[in-house]
Image 1: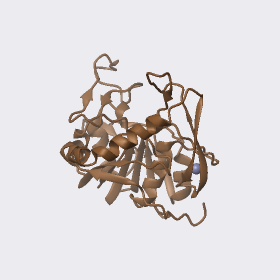
Image 2 (image 1 turned 90 degrees about the horizontal axis):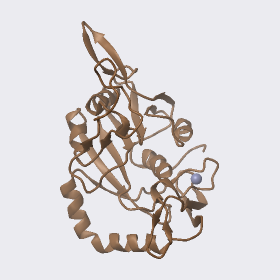
Image 3 (image 1 turned 90 degrees about the vertical axis):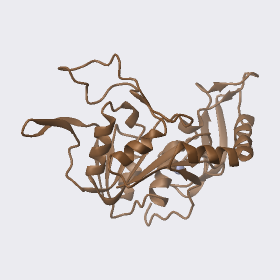
Image 4 (image 1 turned 30 degrees about the vertical axis):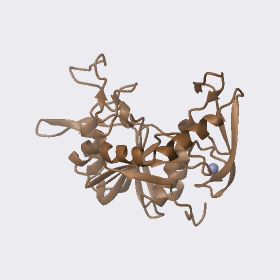
Length: 275
Ligand SMILES: [Zn+2]
């Protein structure tokens, strides 16, 4: 990975709102339908689907493996894999579609450089080692803490100083964080002005509004735990408004797809908010 260079364009289209996205769906309907039909044509009754292509983070020819178990069952019994979480490359780190896309995006679109200071928010992920290798420094903070900020003021806090990092990366974690607004404000606080927050999250790409599923969570001393074990938000497009409300100057959802790069699946998104 010495002298990491990304000559491969990240194949995405980006949107600031559901309205913009719906306009794109109308304009690009034929192409998107063709992608969907193509992906279904790859369905199989076998355990694995193998695809040859290019691993963008490794910049090499690769064979991608998608396990069909747990995938969608078609009428004829063939299985469509969960493309987003499958299509593992055969490079050393065996990165999934989503993790390869995240690394590719960080370098090509979010300005990850060898002098970048990076904060990872959320549980450890398969791309972490590679992000660390691409950056000057990396700290990993799995969750918010609940702290007394001073004079009786309590709040959710990230254990990091103001404007401490260039990049915050979060890989499928925000939907498990009950105090979402507090988390976004904290992630904004620790970013240098102009720094980027990049994340993936399970996303309802046809939904305008996020839905909170906080009912039934155990409460500790009358307040919510700082992190729940399961999914507590089903996120929709208002996540972009929440990011802007939290002080980010721009927030966009990037939809990506490429057969050659092993980025199959409809509605795959990476989010970028600039502090
Ligand atoms: Zn690879």
